[in-house]
Length: 223
Ligand SMILES: C[S@@+](CC[C@H](N)C(=O)[O-])C[C@H]1O[C@@H](n2cnc3c(N)ncnc32)[C@H](O)[C@@H]1O
Image (cartoon, rainbow, N blue to C red; front, side, top):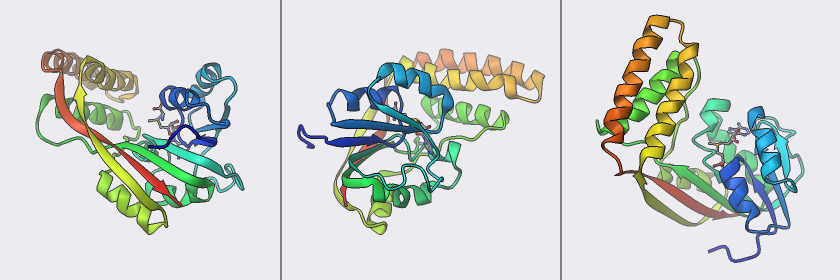
């Protein structure tokens, strides 16, 4: 849909994946923002010519006065609650002055609460995050984001959803997040039984994939 000319590009919540595919599109310049210090070294190694900025979108000085032809927010809306609680409601307005012509938003529908094994995997991950005293991601439905965009003055050009077929990588990825939270539990006996639960769930869920479950969405908007 976008064609070959990407101009200057901003990866508003950068990571290996989005920085990798944006870099492969040969924009005239590429800037990536992340609030997570641990990502910086890997991102600089992955894209040595990109400008990687460590910053927080709640900071009004972040990229002040800068405008980019294309802004990409790839799995950022859902991640914001983990880094700047409640700021989802202000994020689209916050990035609007940086959008020269096009905004692409990529996100995930909230996980279906259907009692399936993959639902249990997501609930197990979130329970571990909460017991560790950390904050969970919060995904938003495509329709709600389309509505937000209109309210803050974007023109929605197109939107599409893509059903997910989830495999071993998803099950292991989510349960490994849960496992990494165990050292933060205040009750060590609970951490021990939770560890056994994670591995039992891993065994059951791995036997149930691949499975079509949930969907991701992409929205294109203009200013
Ligand atoms: C789930 S990661 C997505 C990474 C990337 N798009 C990819 O797929 O490789 C979310 C990204 O958004 C960033 N992020 C989330 N909330 C942020 C905030 N309030 N300010 C700045 N960056 C934020 C995170 O630091 C991270 O770089």
